[in-house]
Amino acid sequence: MPKIDIGALTEVSSSTYPEPFRSRVAGRFRKALGDAGGLTQFGVRLTRLTPGTQSSVRHWHASEDEFVYVLEGTLTLITDAGRQSLSAGECAAFPAGVPDAHHLVNESGRDALYLEIGTRASADLVTYPDDDLMVRRSAKDAAYTHKSGAPYEL
Image (tube, rainbow, N blue to C red; front, side):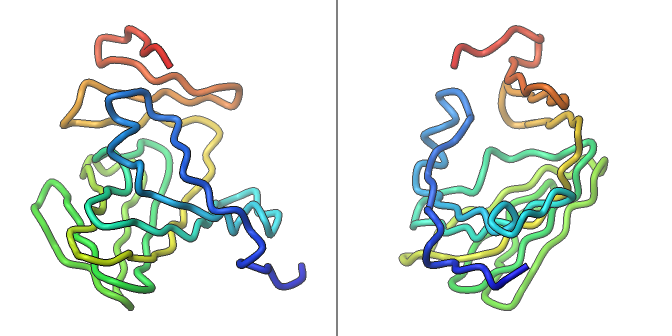
């Protein structure tokens, strides 16, 4: 596979979260490096978080490993154990099935840039312990629901 021209890739700021969660990630911008390279087993994204933005709603995956590596700036990693600072050259890993909810928050005054790498499981259950939100994903679709199972209106 030839070199990927990162500068030519579109930076996407959209989110599939229903409101009120979508607005939490409004300052998150991603480039799908793995898709550009034709990867199918795992995803790689170059992600930019603007000040005051979070990477996601705090969550954990039943079936997908996740890994982040900070390239520029400083981010706050929030897990069940508390808060940790992650700066350029530092990383964190989140094994599938470990119920340790996590997300990154940019509490600094400048943009932060990091790599997100994760499994592309055909099915997954994503748990959001701080919010009334769950995602059940199959090979065919994904459904955002309340913890009761009632669907969110998208």
